[in-house]
Amino acid sequence: MSLQFDHIVYGPIHSRRLGSSLGVNLLPKHGKICTFDCIYCECGWNRDHRGDTVLPTKEEVFAALENGLRSCKTNNLSIDTITFSGNGEPTLHPAFAEIIDFTLALRDEIFPSAKVSVLSNATQLARPGVKEALAKVDNPILKIDSADEALARTLDNPVGTYSVASVMEQMAWFKGNFVLQTMFLKGVVDGRTIDCSDRLFADKWVEMALKLHPREIMMYTLDRVPPLEPLEKVSVEKMKEIAAPLIAAGIEVIVKG
Ligand code: SF4
Image (tube, rainbow, N blue to C red; front, side, top):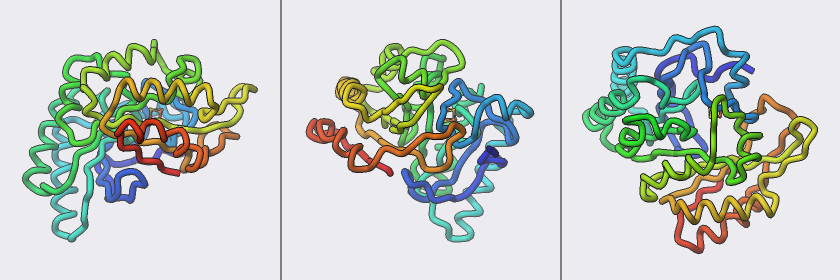
């Protein structure tokens, strides 16, 4: 599976979750670096993308972003959001906080109507400055794929130590001012059948989401071919059924099939 992002700034592309999105990749152009190795990752497995470990400098990010924003402006291309995602986990960049600061300044100057979004797996929240930087953007979109520790490890293959309970503790710092993102899929992994929409897992996930009470939840399922087959989508109807108690509790839930 090939990497999706071979530039620092790419797009705008249409994102099913965010609309017209100017992407920012703080990871290598020809390699993937992530603290997860999700079975559904659109970039493929970490082990297949170790050739390039060079991160862009903050100066290169600034130049690419300024150029991208000005070029969209000149060409009358609309941007709903400037989105940090790319070939791995964006908050791993050592200058992440500084990059967020100048991104917000460039956005205010060149494209004030655009939001700034960060798609993060939330594993770096305990590192100094990461939570504070995420709290400055319009959409800190933070992943927990399951409230069940074993299922979360199966889905996400964390590279180091990982516990849903400690990520939840870190997320509590945001006092609900974040977007929770969760992947729903089913299939066979290492000979075991898994189903994120199974009643037991779904109930635990709802209980966790009610506790975190984020301002928004993004439930989504597979879009492109995952590195591990056979995995299958969970239907929109099923995700909506799972979301019902969260909507009743006043949380905005976006479901993307
Ligand atoms: S957290 Fe994101 S980039 Fe990292 S492996 Fe999972 S899907 Fe891929």
